[in-house]
Picture 1 (spheres, helix red, strand yellow):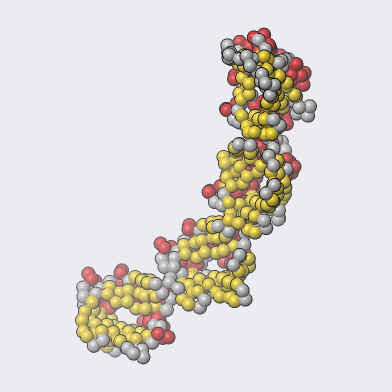
Picture 2 (cartoon, one colour):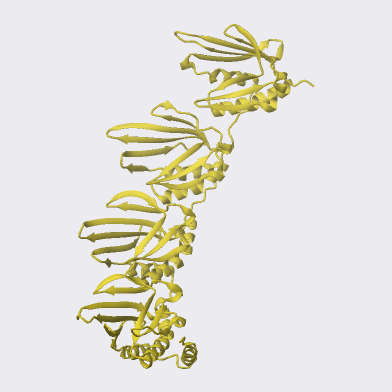
Length: 556
């Protein structure tokens, strides 16, 4: 009994009399609701059009059994959501049924039982009092759908509105929502100096008490394809995922910062409100991305970039104490975090050269309740020195900048690649005398270490002697290495970083064991030696200088 012919006739008719008043059609449809007597139960049916929303209807059915007990059921729905192809009559043992199903099976129909919202449905059933009444209801439903679609489209149309108008409309739409005994008082407002940043504050009240939650985000941080109306049980909300899978959304619970989130959730009173909120959000996302892009600063010089990055370093209040950050405005830089807690403080220091960092590795991440910008060294080289509470730590391959908020993190992540490119790799090409000086300073004197590099013979500048010694209260040692510079492979000079030390390694041609050694008075031979360096810059300078000196001594 599919009403294909009826549907085609009505659609053609509507093209002619498209100005038919929707109010009249829904009132006429309401007049067709009749009481239906089943074998055991009696069904009293009513339809109530919404006077301010002509496309919205509430269908009520009161079922009374033979013991005079009744169930009151109501379905509130937008007639524009009904798929006209789904409207059809089906027979059953109790009564003829007229099915109305929502487009694409969406659960957009609110279902109330005995006055309480019980959930959402994707269809409703009107009972017909005989075939004539069933056909009448079917015909009138189909007649009312096209003008309902037109009426809803006029309400939902957001075309031609400015971004500012859309933002204010969104703020006006979002409000209080009650679900059962729980009330969600929502307030949406713009925050800070950026028109694309919003704060959603929600006060949740129930018989168990009250909670307060706040979310802060930018339209530009959301993903257009990630906006959706989600209906689960008795709850309806518009959810929006963040772009790039990053937790862009700042979260507060009862005034205390919580972990950043990858999702925004706005509760809505009904599916119509949800569709409006989702449509506006989707429309504003490109605007937000453009706003984010426009506010990124451009630095043409290194000092300008340093000023902007260092200016983004703020004091950050944490649960276990405060952290204050400072950055030395130089290519050879230090990033210091001073941690204060219960009247005591300690420093965490990173020393590095911006030229050693990989501009492609810059990443902005929200880690739990922190905003971090991380950047790795080129080839993951262990070129980052660090100390904690004055004690040197192992060398690392990453620097992490911690920022007070997402916007500052966004700015630092934007500026770092430019800053890195404006800081050339640090190394000095020196003479043999410079090399001797760097080698001497490479020994840790506080540990009783000493190191020297000299000519093995005053008359032969390509014969070298390296002496390394350690003097202690209980034990001392000394190692002497003599070798020809022309026996060392200039292409195999390497920087070696191990835990807290950095050295330059020399290796003989073909890895031959021809370097003469005397270690604690015991003679021998080896193919490699390591010259300790004071730091990474000294090691780099040693490397390039030794490469040149070795090539000058190379035998033809």
